[in-house]
Length: 146
Image (cartoon, rainbow, N blue to C red; front, top):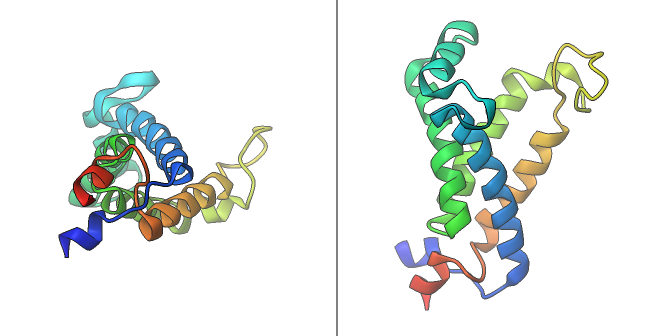
């Protein structure tokens, strides 16, 4: 079972997909977990999720971990399918609980009440690629699956 979970080809296209998704979500996760890049940090994010969005604390914790540790996992290619799954679930929840009401497009002009779903759809698509095909070349998964 573990062998199937980490199996992947030596495909550099998968590496590109994995790295882009990983860097983007590590940055978002670092905002939430560590307060880097202008984020609120762990405590501030937990307060926002639980008190403002009314997300149960265990699910808020999992969302923060999915972005931060999922991003790290994708960057190094460790358990890429698991990391991509966590991010995919995170994005699906964000789409259906918050962003779907704001339409398709991002809020570039500041005219909408919030962000649309276009960013989330891209993240979901990239996550699906990693879940289906694996971490690709230059990954810990690839090194262990040889």
